Image 1 (cartoon, protein in one colour):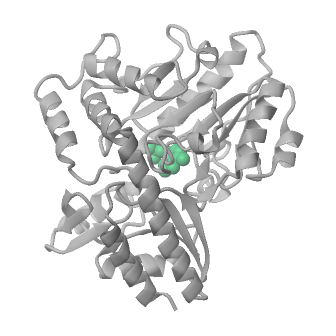
Image 2 (cartoon, rainbow, N blue to C red):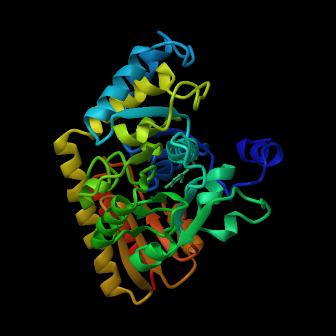
Length: 391
Ligand SMILES: Cc1ncc(COP(=O)(O)O)c(C=O)c1O
């Protein structure tokens, strides 16, 4: 049996896999087991933002792997302490909780928001408003938070206390708010939902509403954070600060790590014993993430994302002008979407055959989330392929 056969035989068939088995990566390049080379415009779904096997990250991982891998959170470790300090210095936050994944970071955010009020005796204040089309993860709480029915099927009853409202609609949000709401949770740019950015005015109005009503604002920056949208965190583009923020994906450039960050006020919700995890924030994962953060948060690096993202978007826009099958171009920085009149899956397959990895979401949207080190020439190559494929 080869890699594909073994996988199909022994692993739960929960993923619509493409048929390619990858064996090696370097920068934007990936190689499959047959020796074919690909340019990766998905980066493991916005994870390998510094490209595959970035030398500095590989060095940090291998140094740490030969020094100390895990001790658990009953003890202190240097990489964890340093990553926490660096994240706090570069964000609005005062405290961080480390997890292993995005869903777990969101679980921590949901628990923090509820406990913040319950610790003050406000037991009936437990509802969280999230957005239609949102995606927050696959655990029971984050699935309950997610505003997409199709992925909830078969898992009912879900967790009580989640209300979904249309995204970018402030009146709908205002109407949903009452004294039982503890938090509003949203992605500044909806990723899985179709690469849909929040409107500038909307995010400001959401912040004002939260301030008026004493509600906590949670930004899920698991996909949009770590430079993906051209600033270290996407909310900086909007000049709106949350009370709680979650990160994962690119934080470890492929090593599993998530983080839930909060300002001093919201952070009061967790006290000794409130929450925990065996693996969250291991020396190995935090040593890698510290190096990732150092590189991505360099002002020149962030500037380059804005510049290349603008270039990429302009090229996609020119495809729209040329091809009637392109219905829209959306996104921020290097998280971009092309809405097409056709089946996204067909384009993903056709691009793969030509050596380009892209992603299809919501049936008709092509999502691009390349490593942030992508070069203009690589963008040009993909645009040429799309130009050929689009009717
Ligand atoms: C915005 C957002 N939140 C949460 C998650 C869940 O993260 P994970 O798959 O690491 O649990 C994702 C994953 O795609 C995401 O895009």
